[in-house]
Length: 403
Image 1 (cartoon, helix red, strand yellow):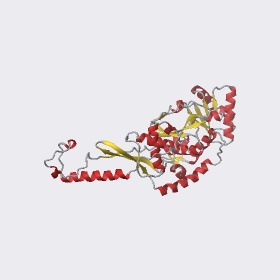
Image 2 (cartoon, helix red, strand yellow):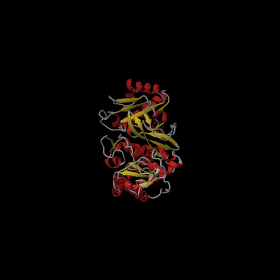
Image 3 (cartoon, one colour):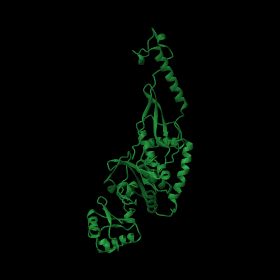
Image 4 (cartoon, rainbow, N blue to C red):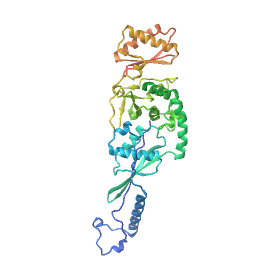
C-alpha cells in the first residue's frame, strides 16, 4: 500500500503595518515601536506594501466560512469527533463534493486538519477525485486571521462525472441479486467474495489508492479493496469505515463493518489467496479467515493507527465460520463426522478449497493430524490421492486445497 501523501502547511506571512511612506521620508521621525531598529531599502518597503495589498485582496476575495448542513451523521469517524471538529469536517467535505478550489474554514488551527481529512477519507471510500489537500494561513502581526482549505484534485469536474458513470455501471453488477431483505451477514459475504473474485491484487496497478482501480481497472492494492468495500456497504445501508495501520511490517488498510448492531473486522485483501503467496498459488480462491472477526483476532497481526477510538469487537455470531456451520468447539465423534461431511461435500462439488475453524489451537492441531497427517480425509473423499493444506494457528484454521 502506498503511503498517503502528507499535506504541507503553506503559510503567507504579512508585515505588521502597511507602510505608506518611503524610508527616506521617515528621516527625523520616530518609527513605530514594533519597527524600532529596522532600516530597509526603498525597494524592500515598496515590496512590503505590495505584498500586504495583495494579501488584503486575497483575503477580501475569500468568503466567510460556510455554515454547512451535515450529511455525515451516523458515520463512524465523524461521530468520533468533537462538535467543533465536525464543523470543520463538514466544511472540508462540502468543498470536496462541490469541487471547490478554496474555501474558508471555521478555525485558525492547522494542526488538526490532517486528522480531520483522514476521518473524511475513512468514512467516504468513494472520493476517487481527490488525494490530498493544502491549507493556507492568513496572518497579521503573527496572528492567524483566516484559514483556507484547498483540495488537491486528480481530475477536472467533467472527468470526475465521466468516471463516476463508469463506476456506477460496475457497481450495479456487484449489487445484483442482493435484496433488501437479505441478512447483513449475507450482504457482506457476497460483496467480500465478489471483490476478491473480480479484482486482482497488483502492487503496480494504476489508481490503486482509490476505487477506480477496483471498478474500472480490476487491479488494486489494500487501499483500493478497503475503499471499495466501504463504498459498496454504504449502498447496502451497512455502516462501514476504512481502517489504516500496519500489517506484515508495512502500511495496510482494511475495514470495520457493523452487522446487526455489532462491529466486526473485515480484511478483503487478506481474503485473496494470491496476496499471501502469489508464486505458489496458481489458482486464486477466496479465503474467509478475515471475514467478520473480533478485535482479539485482528490485533494478532494488524496494528490500527487511527486518531479516533475504535470499538471493541467481541461478537462472533456473524463470523463466517460460525454462520456457515464450520466452527467447532470440540472434536468428538459427532464433530469428526460433521467435518468429514463438510470435506466430502466440498470435494464432490469441485470446490478448490475448504476452510474449517476451531475454538483453540489444540483442537485445530488434533483435527489436522486426524484428517490430513493420518489421511482420514480419504475416508470421506473417495478417490482423493493427493491433497494440499495449510494452517493458521493464530486464527485456529486449517484449509484443505484440492488439486
